[in-house]
Length: 205
Image (tube, rainbow, N blue to C red; front, side):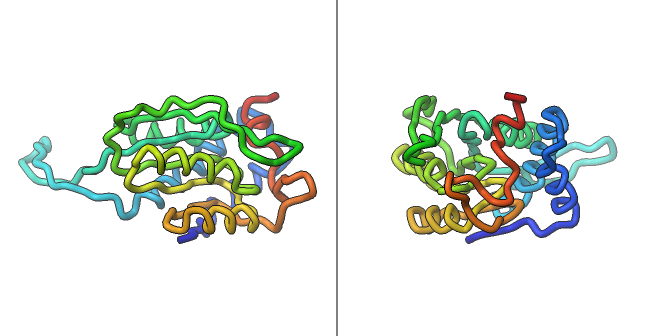
């Protein structure tokens, strides 16, 4: 399943995010705002359970999330997305995966993995702003699949058709949530029109 967030506010903020004049502090803030909206969308079918609660007026019942949820940002660009989602759901646990794309081969290289052997997760979200070739996303999903996570969802900001196709081919059961689908990759594997390097732009490097 592919979901593109077709919302006026997302469209508005994506223009600001793409703009080359947007400075790092504002860029980080926009990443967080857009990511939180995507997180709400991606949680639409999460399991709930009923609980009792005392309001200042009386006793009633409500519903809370019944699943153990993990956030898995792909370092370093996924960090801004994870911060936004952790603010929305502080109970979520955060794992960090370090994966970079070799600029010559365009193949993913894993350099950091802090996934615990025993996790007890019901649902994990892989967070990576740019779904370009799909290499890093698929590498992260492979790690979670090997760890036995029952359900995994991918959330990104922008996806290229090539990356979306690669992810769907390798992991057809993984839902994909994006703020935008762009035109194509250039000869260097960067998304067009894209927004440049999401990690560099977040951290001013």
